[in-house]
Length: 138
Image 1 (tube, rainbow, N blue to C red):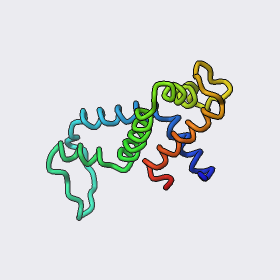
Image 2: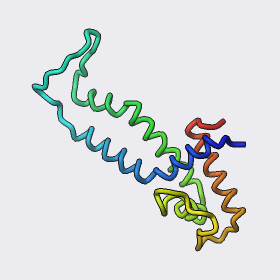
Image 3: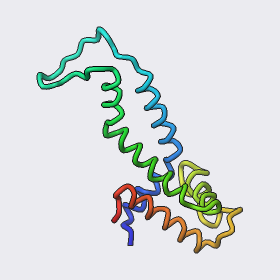
């Protein structure tokens, strides 16, 4: 059985997917469009090696922990979403992305040809697959 904390974390990751995808795309475009800042004094440690080129500096920024975490979460949700059939994708959109603040209750999801029990099983499978991809669960 899945731990309650892991379940909540994964639900939040899935629910925040559209906003995080937009945020990641903006971050990448900002990094790729940024030019080197000349003339700004900064103090570096002695062992700091300055990037040799603008491209190297951009690559280092894109490999930051923040960017990698966002990228992994986006890939996990997209991988699971794309592996679902059309009706299951609609259920996922309705359940997690119709209202960004909360999950829509199963009984309030209409236009899906599944019973409440089937919807619960599908959502459980979605959350487990995202959790396995992210390493949150084994």
